[in-house]
Image 1: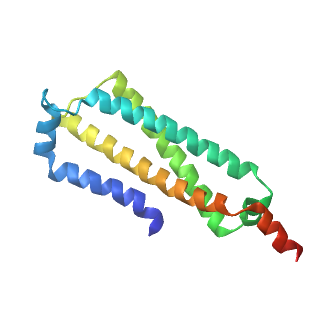
Image 2: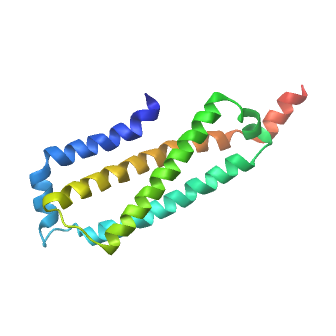
Image 3: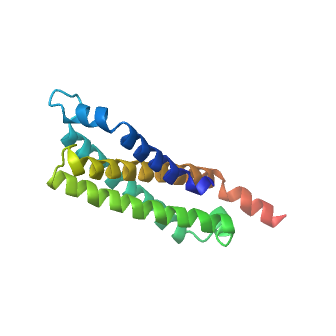
Length: 156
């Protein structure tokens, strides 16, 4: 179930966008609103590009490291799940970056069918963000294990 949590979070965002459609659309469509959609598009694009780059760097590190703790856990099911979630996070992050770029080029407003496209985009953002957090936290745990302690244990 833990692996489904990012997607569940994104679906909850989509459900809230559906239930609260009227007030959200009215707020975002109001020219006096403090939320400017163009700024939101740019912020999400910037974040997704940075996030995806970070995830790709983590992937390169994990795949390229054959010694130490990462080398020792490389063939385990847990590491297989981690690399699968890492690849998923990269793919979803790339999709978010691409869709955000399209929204920068062709900005949508929260009216009619465009509201639903924006709602899906926001759900995609939340999915990518939750995936990123999951991968970053797991990677943080992995890199906390010092390689020299592992080598000492092997020698005894």
